[in-house]
Length: 151
Image 1 (cartoon, helix red, strand yellow):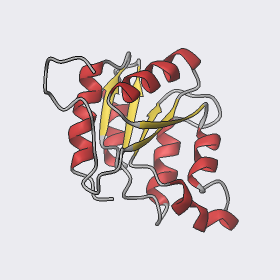
Image 2: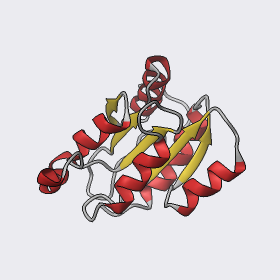
Image 3: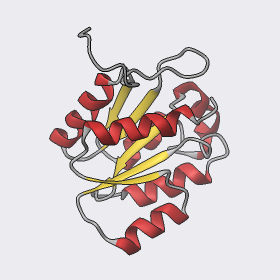
């Protein structure tokens, strides 16, 4: 641990746990970048390469698995908007429709700055919309979002 800035680079939840973040992106390099930035902030990170995998992890893949969502407790989902098969917007809708997961903040990241898309995501319950590439300063903003969450 290097000395220096005492800014809140390490996140700890109110209950003393390290936040668990699910990072969803079809691009391996982007996924690794998000994972590295979050781990730099002492987060536990699980990655998924697409929406269906993310839903599986969250226990939302099918109706029979409704109760499994509690087993994969995450404090935040960060997802790319543009992915084949299921967009980040569709993933957001599925999470917000779930009684178990609807309180979990979802952050959408995209390389495209399309105001109507951003508005749609925010209206459906996205916590934030961040322009790619993700930077450490973006992750620091997420820390503020997470600290306001109740687990």
